[in-house]
Image (cartoon, rainbow over all chains, first blue to last red; front, side, top):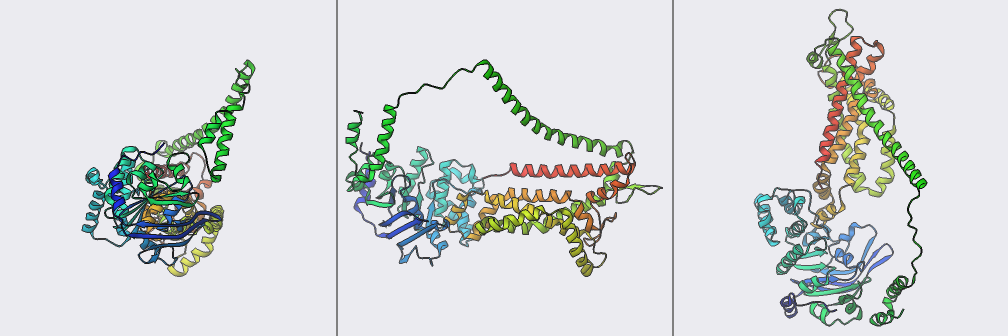
Length: 270
Length: 340
């Protein structure tokens, strides 16, 4: 069985033709959980204004890897990262890096929608308040702007003061994306953002991501190979902690170099 | 087995997939080859049916009756206290309004005895509120420390400390109040040193561990995904605790405080040892006063059943019960409002 590639062929072509500059360069990254070697010597570029998809079976280290890009692994006491993730002349994995500032520039959205149990507008404004912005006008403008970027504005503009937990799952996830965008980060990390959502919400978010990549660099972990094929410019295939193959999505899906990649994308395992 | 051969041909896999292949093969083998054993499914015989039902219903009876006993106890206490408490108004014809608002309590005066319980109601409420005011910031701080900051260490050291504090009998707290707070008050604020503030301090320390441990539990109950979300949008640890975790735990923190208050409200012994037990309405927190519980414990032994004073004390008990019910209603209301 070959995967269907006809859905968004034009995106493919776009990604293929214009190569954007490298935003993040990953060199020899190793991540351990205690004695468990979860990510093994990963090297890959992440290109600006493009979508890079990380695919692979469960437990292959792709989530661990994406969480290291904005140092969310710091929250796990047993996790240890080695190597270099170079972003704007800095090594993100350097212990001396200001992690709080890093996360303001590299935002993240998780698998489960996790809005705060506050109102919709407070959800968007909290990151700004964290950053010390208290100007009412700026807060309101950013709220509107962020919600428009994820096409949620029209759905919620009349109930910005309602609780965010009352939204549907898909709306909550788009709110979380909007929240991550409120600080105007340069990179957006998405860890399986649509795996808890229905197909309609999923396709809405995919559409938004294709819009958002014009302004942001997007890295997305996905279980769904069709999703990677539909939206990603570059795809990285992880297996058992190793980066097996990285390339343009089209190349990777049509002419995989490695046998393991071919087996995975044709659905023989995973 | 023959059908396995083309399957193997399809999976021309490198050594890496070998393990996976073997499990697949084993699964296929077991499905194909294991003969179906005789099923153990039977109809129950008459005797088995009877013994089953008997043992089932016996277990049920034990569980049901223990639950029922609890309900009976609550209803009985409420009924008994209501009946006894209303005696002073129905049989002894005390005016209920004068009883609740009167400020003079001279029950044993031969001519014109007065039953004004307001000083005690006020004393109870004042002690409770002051104790909550003193205990809440420290308790919440301890809870944050235990649940958010010193996670492992907090579990290992703070948890036993809190348990020991909960386990100390109230008379010990009273003794400490008597030997530490009362002399301190006397030295700094004059008077006898037995006063409302001393009572509130003692009770505040008593409820501290209760509030802290419930508050710590409610902070721990805040899902980690909210903390993760907060860190991911560039929140610092303090911002995360203050702006995300505490508001999310909000109503359960209130529950912890109200539970502590209801404990403070019911405390008699320790308060009685330090509050001074004056029957007058206190004019400041440095005046001696009394609470509903202290006046009951002090006077009840000296009355005869059926006397007016005895009935009046039952009425005070009824007021205590009513206010405890109000606390419980507040807790129920707060926990119903909980969102996450």
